[in-house]
Image (cartoon, rainbow, N blue to C red; front, side, top):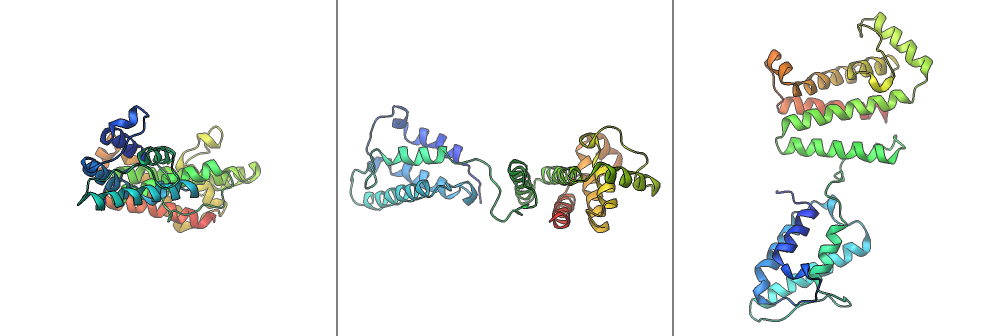
Length: 259
């Protein structure tokens, strides 16, 4: 199904009903039938996670949609004027436009993992949005976008969890990773400057992720690096459905370990 975001519908309202640009009151007649039908159809294509979450806004939007649907029915036989919902103080088109203006164009789908173990709300919701977007990219056949974004989520999750560890534990894990040749050398600089490979190795040493998850995360790392044309050419490999699924699997496995 096509995906329409609220801002697109707001723009469409300005085209379908030019009167809104003046801010003046206006009535809807039979001649507005196609415009009203188009507006109702566009609203149907807005994903549920982008619809209004404030109860008052949701109620007003439903009331406005019902008024417009009633108008369409009446206009099949009569040219009756419609304007406001019961108790409203202006043309219903203004109400719908203003409600949609307050709606986000991006939000995690309801099925996206909650990540409640991350207390930083901004970080948590940002990661959930990236996870949701990566899954949407997979559904849309956008293999590179899904692969790269999922790999980025894995990296951010591992950075976050290592930031919760103590400095002595990190140093001990680094030493062990180098000794076991999981890493060729100790990384330079602070955690934020480490590579994903280093995050994976140290997280595994600290038993923050298990061996299977570390292996899957390394696959995601390798696939994410295919964004670089030179690497993709050398390896004769491109992002496809398989790389996207592997990267998203790494996300879910890391989340399972950290939860």
